[in-house]
Image (cartoon, rainbow, N blue to C red; front, top):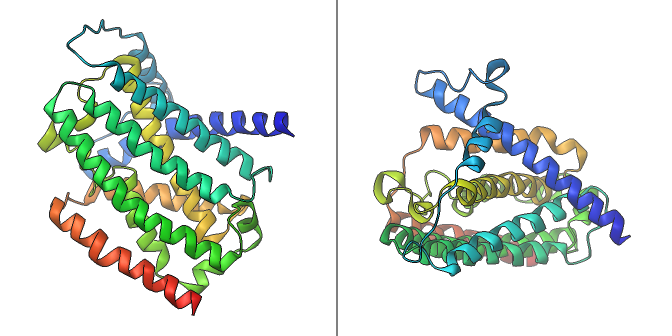
Length: 297
């Protein structure tokens, strides 16, 4: 059983990496056409190999890090983030072979809470005020997200009667029918966790010069960049599992979720940070708690 679960996790990791390669290409295409210009179209047929060319360019670049550039804590943050993303991929792969345990939903919540620590290490250990500001913004945004996400986990457990993601496979459309407005609210919350516009306070290129990853290049920047997009894909999948209970038929909703991330980055402006904090703690969290109260009653 362990070998079967391990192989399914490796397969999930490979699938996630391949999907994000083309997701990045699609995002750059959509961003290009939204700004009346062409996206990548030179490398391969209509630019299909552009992501792989960028990967080779970043990997072959080498930079010698001296003592005053960053501490070992920042490198530890990169390794921790890679390990957490691998765990995400194993949860994704184990879902489709029905190998997840009875508390897999809670394990997903635990891994999500550790991601903020990893990125906090990345920014805090870089000896840069831009990285420090970006990591602090990211840490507080993750706390705001986890409070709302915990409410969604409890709400799903009450509706489905289980904390296992596999059990949600057989309960299609249940949560969506009970709480129809939960889906758009969940999408807004996930935008915060994945550092996407209009809640990309961890990077904020126009304000913080790329934020927490400003001191990274080469392989380390590639790892941070790839892990961010893997988290986007995994949360797009988790939205389907919690809201729709979708199994293999959830490909359409997964595509809609990924398209929403591209559209949000191309069109939405970044909102003020105090508005963001007020919205999450004064609007979204009370709404989710109200949903919990109604379901319990």
